[in-house]
Length: 114
Length: 112
Image (cartoon, rainbow over all chains, first blue to last red; front, side, top):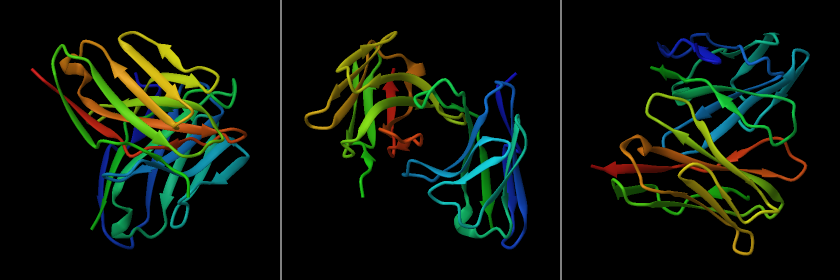
């Protein structure tokens, strides 16, 4: 079983719809992240959370919100989806052994907004 | 602004040959660097890392070289195999920061 699980794997939605992407992890990590990947661009950080009560904005948080329901769960919401939010979304986790701890990624959610 | 960039967006290498993927970074405050491999349909996977107090680090068939003078990072893959076909990303971590900055990626294709 995957350590970092994202659901759904693929989603097609319409402009204006609310959508939630979910992430769960079995690694026992405190730190969780949401990234967005567009063709030809690197991974861009949307939001990150160091623990259940700590949520932080990343580079491109506008149009997104997150919820850290438990240590193992971190969901990303698009309140009103727009076509330029079509992208591949990754959840990642990291332990607290130090700032240079490795990120572990899920398999991604491909989101298409029509 | 400062960013991590890659010299070549695509690279094709004959199976069995060595490959070199390059990365230029411009943030002189970065003191930790990572290479990730992303296969089709999968999330990025850690390959190897290096701290700024080193200039070379070796793993299994992979070597990372760091040249701080010219702010250049490279990933060498020895005796490439079909399974090495993927997109490779470098990432940097500025000193005092906990957020990685990723490059745009290089697509490596291994030719049988």
